[in-house]
Image (cartoon, rainbow, N blue to C red):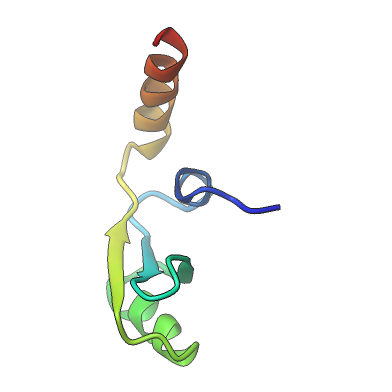
Length: 72
């Protein structure tokens, strides 16, 4: 099963970091710090990544976003 970025982020602890490959367009590192996420991405041979911080209130933000999608 392929997960969306929203699903992956919603499964991560608030304040953690997600590294996304610019080349392969997939998640290549998950970690509590940006440095660790980048190191994990590098360990998989990825050097061009975007680092995303999971919001402290991501559960609430995702719920509100989902409710807005349902209303549309």
